Figure 1 (cartoon, helix red, strand yellow):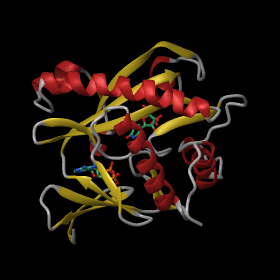
Figure 2 (figure 1 turned 180 degrees about the vertical axis):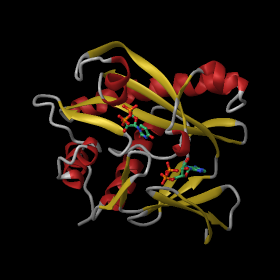
Figure 3 (figure 1 turned 90 degrees about the horizontal axis):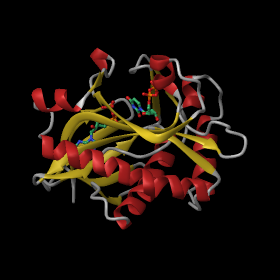
Figure 4 (figure 1 turned 135 degrees about the horizontal axis):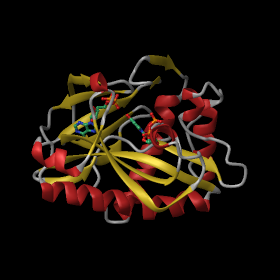
Length: 238
Ligand code: ADP
Ligand code: UDP
């Protein structure tokens, strides 16, 4: 498979076409953004870490029967993925209150959410990713009702698999965001699963091991991502 023209440069990844119309190459850059892209910094090794991290997690999800776009690692910063028609809706599950839930509802950070919440946001930086609901998704044609139902079921299934995986590494999966797309009319998990798009806390001390370290200026961002990877048993290249 050969790399062709750049299709799209996002805030953290660049997407390339290939000579096969079914596949794309995702290039994970070191760029780290927060606040809808208003703050961007380069953090050494972040692209490498997230690319390998995502490959590891996507492998676990595929093993659990979840359809994923990830095909294979091509290099430290690149992965081959299925070319999806992305659905512009972010699916968020929360096991513990944090972030925008606390800001929106005045809930105390850290309380357990039982059952976990499921939320939808429109992927639109100009509108600051507004919260939406399933009726908006159907009315505005962002996804068919049947596909929305599959996205929701798959997002919960990811929770069952990953909550346990992280807990086995002494971490709490606080919340996470997933993006899906269609491949030959099938709903498939796209984009990435990495500490850039989820919250992970040490189970004992509740130390933050995710992108909140960047958002909140806590430092040690990539070091924390590497600690998570090590705790999951991954061996990252030097
Ligand atoms: P953002 O667009 O949020 O700034 P990124 O920098 O991560 O995010 O850019 C990656 C872009 O590629 C996103 O728009 C994402 O929706 C899209 N994408 C991810 N996986 C696929 C895929 N398999 N097929 C097509 N597009 C994808
Ligand atoms: N998230 C993300 N991209 C977004 C918005 C949220 O990856 O554009 C992730 C975020 O990292 C967290 C979860 O989704 O793990 C819930 O985010 P929240 O709504 O709390 O927003 P935030 O406080 O991060 O702005």
